[in-house]
Length: 221
Image (cartoon, rainbow, N blue to C red):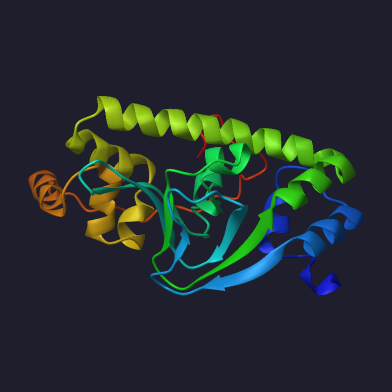
């Protein structure tokens, strides 16, 4: 398995915690590289989540479906210099932790390559790898902050302010994803997004890359 030791998941983990060769061998042996075609569903609501995915390449989204059948994009998933924890990991976390049917769906927007790991990996990693608990604590803290921020944005901001927030904090999303999916992320119809953009007459600047990835920042970005 030595050729798999320096995979993207391990590279990411090394930015947060110390990973020695033995731990790298363990993680490489217990995870699996999978490919999923564009348009495929990695997870459907009402299923029980049995795996967590780390995205290596391609683009995906996690979304909810409301009472009227409208889909609301919860998060975009991709791996680039502008990615952070919320973009890299794909899972209905509540379903995974509680072993109950989920409410989220996850869709591949392009062909995607992912690293897959499940409950058995978690059970063994907590026993075998002391640093894994620290890693998961950092991920859980980040997930909580991201969820809080996302819910606060959707509940308290109007559509224009949500769009301005994206322009300020995640401008790269506008280059990476279509207006249809961006509108879904903002909780509006595509036509409404077009009107907002026309009214503001703004052009998004590409997101800048950063090398400061040693820890998960307080705002989950």
